Length: 265
Image (cartoon, rainbow, N blue to C red; front, side, top):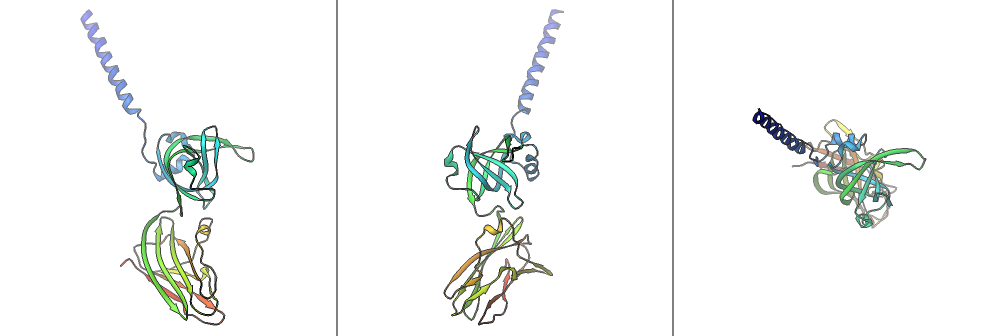
């Protein structure tokens, strides 16, 4: 009887040890990278994604400053709509030595928690807090997926328009252009007259909170002057050919439309 009791206790002990081991394995922390869907959910409840890895772009709206948790900047992960406020913490002020307010940044790091704070209006709200591993200054919040190098110029009576390259991103298309005035008259360029044509669709330039931060082509170009800038359009299929059509003008001279064929071939 005693042997049976001992054997039963031993079995129970072994089972309990196996259960604890299994529980230990199952409770290990998840450090995987947040998906796009999880990134959106993080702004509802960041606590459920604690210790998960994160990779995102945003714009600094405040800081760097120091609070009870450390050195941080506040970042809008959706600057076009002025949304998705995020607290990004660094090791020290030196973590932010190359960035400042209004800069776009690329952040990789780990989700800490949902941070509760008081707004300037006295209301309490919350935002995700991120421990940054790396903070880089970026020109864009929408990273380039593919690029077509064009580097073609159209010349008319000293008016030289160059299409340098086209960048395709997830939410926008960026056109890099240059205009040089080798005439003796002042020439003009107005970006809102520029069109992109693909098949039977015509695209107009887009103007928003982000695109206004890109280098801008000057509208009035004096003799001997060269200007460069970036035009943005909505997302366009990068696998199909495009045509860029732009207009130039002058009080003294007339120009035909400037046309550029864009192809990956």
